[in-house]
Amino acid sequence: MRLMKSRKRPPAAPACLDRCKVPCFKEEVVERVRRSLPPDLALESARALFAALADRTRLRILHALLGADELCVCDVAHVLGMSVAATSHHLRKLRLLGILGLRNDGKMAYYSLRDRFAAELATHALRKLAA
Image 1 (tube, one colour):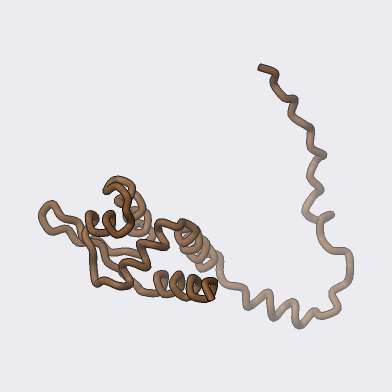
Image 2 (cartoon, helix red, strand yellow):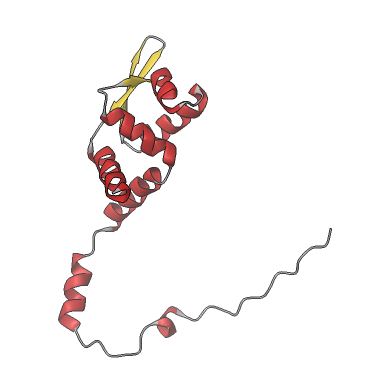
């Protein structure tokens, strides 16, 4: 097998040279918009939420749980037509992000929405895109 040679990239320009050299004509607007930017923690939370919503299976799970108070893992697996193991993987990810809550009853694990926001956001986007 022949290995490909890696191409050398030109060195990155220092940050100070990469900035716009045009004077700022709307300084007040720029400063107002800069001050209105969300804090890093809020941006990271939004990024994590949208990453979770970027998966088709997780969107289907949220839609299913929006229509039911809670569902056991087996019921979610039946709704999705997937294995219990694959379903559990997605449910766990949504739970770790704080989107789903978990209730154990003996050997049964029941999932529910902790907050309807993510499910409603996903449903709203789906309705808008399906129209």
